Image (tube, rainbow, N blue to C red; front, side, top):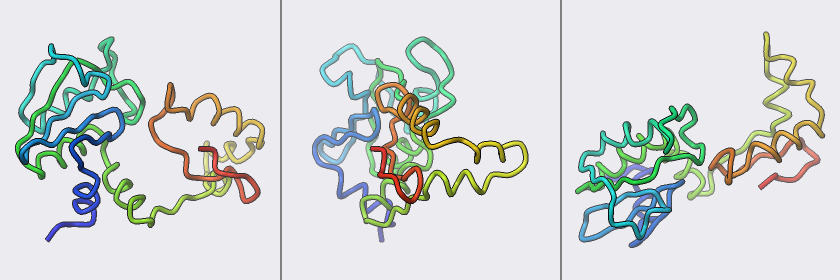
Length: 168
């Protein structure tokens, strides 16, 4: 019996599916993963083990360590071929840790977002000062950092506060 995550992923898998910066192609039960920008390239380095996704995801094109795995700086030039669905699931979890569970919750209409202001109000200790940020400052940070073209691949699903709208 498939888990909620496995059912959500299987339902999304058509012949071509994007997950973050990854293009997934399904062919005869096998799966081919590459950077979505590399779809037409023929000079890709080939990997065949789901665990190799750890190394592929570790550094960007310039060789810099990727501390935020959802940042839009996944390196180019690779192709990962996995033979089974469990291997695909493992590889995606290595590329984007924890994102499959969020994807499944979103796909099933069960993803609940917490307002940013509520999160900030819960901060304590040295982070307590974060609660003092103004609405204008929040808008500035979100506008300049939480962007899929340069900051993060995630879609903003939360509101700044009770009165505001969702930023994405």
